[in-house]
Length: 190
Image 1 (cartoon, helix red, strand yellow):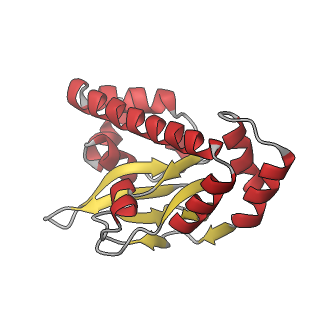
Image 2: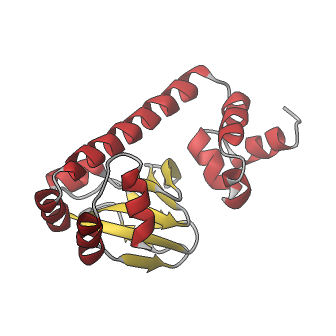
């Protein structure tokens, strides 16, 4: 399944057969069960995660004890607490499998080894980070400029299969609406 990551990398940078072999030798897949945590708030974030299959959720638990979705990690997407990983600080986030999932965890040592042997991977990881940052900015844009209904319509148009596979309460949290409000939107009562 590391081949899925190699395919993803090759959309940005060309890899030789030798470079592919290096990646396959260094990385491995990890199988997660539904609701399994990769890390919890207060714990260190030791890796960046490439989602081969399934769905992960990055979230915080607010002062009222309510989980607030920050990001989903779906097939062929990277997800982590980037600042916690970079600065080796305890995470403020929780990263959990929404359903059974397969990921590739890349820790700091593996990143250094791969970047040392395949310098062009630094470009790939920069492009990954730029994409993640751009997606975050777009989310802010639609949270601040669209109504709850508009956010749901936009999100479901952009991710039609995803909204059918993920629990609605998680989508509601991600969109900043209550599950009840989302039910009304889905029933076209709003």
